[in-house]
Length: 129
Image (tube, rainbow, N blue to C red; front, side, top):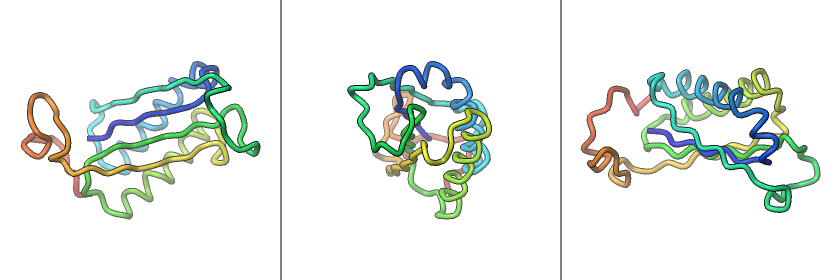
């Protein structure tokens, strides 16, 4: 499971939403061997006064938080980060300077999905990649 939140200025996210979503999903599929149909993206657009960041970031600055089951290897997580930077620049035209990524891992038993604790769910994909 991977739930992804993308924060940025409302104007930037409105303009770049589809390209960002595509870039992020392609990286998750590739690096985490994630099923194509599993896409959980939430775009959180903020007003300029609510999105304070360093002056060396542009109006295209985005924060990406990925909440996922524990179990992925260090190599898979590093690959995900590298692919995110590359895909986002290619698809959305946002440079690495304007992208920050945080991966937050949770044990499966801390999730509730479709009426079950996450560790009791039958998954159609591997978590240990």
